[in-house]
Amino acid sequence: MDVKKIAKLAHLEITDEEVAIYTPQMEQIVGYIEQLNELDTADVEPMLGGLTAAGQATDAIREDEISTSLGTEAALSRAPASTDGHFQVPKVL
Amino acid sequence: MLKNEIERVLTNAERLNDQLGSFLSIERGHALGRAEAIEDAAGELPLRGLAIAIKDNICTKDIRTSCGSRILANYTAHYDATAVQRLNAAGAVTIGKTNMDEFAMGSSNENSAFGPARNPWDPERVPGGSSGGSAVAVASGVVDVALGSETGGSVRQPAALCGIYGLKPTYGRISRYGLVAFASSLDAIGIFGSSAGKIADVLGIIAGRDPLDSTSADVAVPDYSAMLDRSLAGKRIGVPRAFFGEGLDEEVRAAVDASIENLRSLGCEVVDVELPHAKYGIAVYYIIATAEASSNLARYDGVRYGVRAEDAHELRQMYFKTREEGFGPEVKRRIMLGTYVLSSGYYDAYYAKAQKVRALVRDDYAAAFANCDFVLTPTSPTTAFRMGERSDDPLAMYLSDIYTVSANLAGLPAISIPCGLSSESLPIGVQLVGNYWAEGELLNAANIYGTEHPLDAKPLIHAE
Image 1 (cartoon, rainbow over the protein chains, first blue to last red):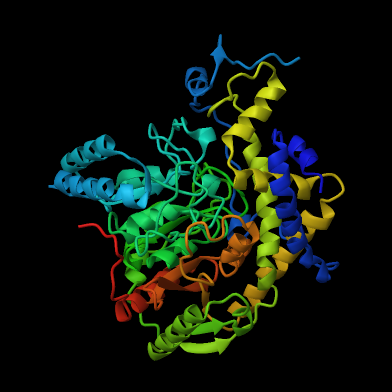
Image 2 (image 1 turned 90 degrees about the vertical axis):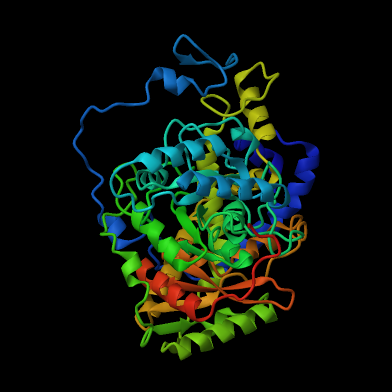
């Protein structure tokens, strides 16, 4: 398992020391979850979303009405950096 | 005077927190202010003055919500979670925010970035997790009720290890609005109580449809308290014997067997049921939960809120450093596992396969409930383990949840009921799983059981 590559996909900058710890642990866990392969599921419908019949029936549609929202000032108030009504980040390129 | 009562609760919380680490913040000023306001408030408040502890992944307006993580160490929400908003409207008083495994990932509370919580029955042992702090706050007698959250057993397992009641309701019963997302198809707010009745009081207030959570169900909320004292005569208890296998501690097995006999003597009928796919629950869970977590935790990038790494001069470097420094080892491991199972070429082998086996787990329960009212299992295969004992072996830690995860996979309600003490005076819990929306029946069974067979001991460390 190429843990360094997976970490990169997940935007995690992990150290070589961490790679050495995570690799055997993750291989062991993936080995464990592969026991599912002993089940024949060719004719099984996957279980997705709406876990209960009542949940599936819940009407999530509403009228499209304007209501109050957080607002720019509040939305920016928890940001590590902001400027002129925008979130601020280090340079992109 | 309500203020004196809240003062007493705060003093207990503060006095025990050095030993037990159950609170990440104790909100003295907030709680006393609320007590004063409620004292003067006119009208009927069903939870008037009820002191409550809230897990630190449930948003509270103007009170820190850290999720037990460095990456949210400075985060304060702009709003209350719907459950908190309803508690406040009913007159409850939030005492503080409780310790937890980081982002609710863990079964021991050792994964908190702010230090572990400790089991009041033996402070060298874990309280369970991930809602360990809430369980300890109730078990140590600081509060009678606390909110936790569940993804795979994070309320029921610590309830069992701490000798209290813990309910995970049906998926969609309590709004998840304001519950910080871990695995959205599994997550549920749960309730700890010193009795089933206390849980019933709180569930009746916070359950029900919420337009702010599209997965909250439009199902009527019954009067749970009115159901508590019904006779259990004729209730059918399904016992999946084949599932009580490897890894089940002998003392836990004996206590659970004794609880089955107690239920029989209360008039219940005991029948055999089979859950042939329940043993695959952990494998299914660690695919679905990690996949959903890898997506949900992508939002922690140091841009809109939370902690940003210093000394990053370019955007991608800022993302990588923020997440490397902000997340602890278990969270990284699960984000990476989720990234792996969803990565190109592996989706069908892992995620799609897990969704199919999840359907089989659900169908097992549907078949069982055709023949019984409750399915009974141990809550946890062992009593509270020693701190550090499983921290280097993630898979052994994951197996702590073998009896609890399947209810989350199927979306079913379940409760852990204290049913005995081991030879080392450590609590043991028995779990009842009910059919969809059967919270009232579960609380009824727990109340009758607890009234007839109470635990006749208190933890070593307990409030005055």
